[in-house]
Image (cartoon, rainbow, N blue to C red; front, side, top):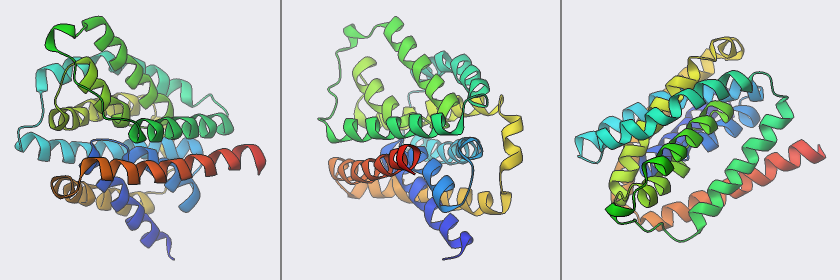
Length: 249
């Protein structure tokens, strides 16, 4: 299979995940870039941020049109992660490749476990704690900067449990958080773009953007829990493969 076809297929899957689940696409983007398209871990995390920024912004527009984005609360949540995202993005360039890969695999496994667990229950409005919300936003920002993941797989349950969002609003608002954190991290990774093959990146990103629109429509037709279980199974397989590659190959 040619590199172009692999890039198109992988991009479409990433976009579908982001559009349907409000996150999780970047957790597939990084291993796809490394193992299917030959990127180094450092270049893959930078490329993933570019892909996720463009795709999340597209999906954000679709959810905003549907009225599923809470701009004020989402902007405050995202603002807490801007500085951590930028700092972690700068630190990522100094870490060994094997450490980045192993850390990424651990995050993928965590995402899968969360998706296989029970759906988060919304807290009452009176239980929302600004300090906890800011801490959660900062943690998501650091995760985005360090590993090149948007953090949507953690942002959605956090918005439901910490800020008492209903699921549709959490998915739409998480895309605002992802876009903001990814942009902040990219600002510190200008040197990381040197190892990116743009002939591969362009079709990957284009397919991801189109896939995000399809994912939004898919979410309206397919059971959310079923989508999450299928995605979680894929993530567990990816995490196991990456850990095996780091420690046994």
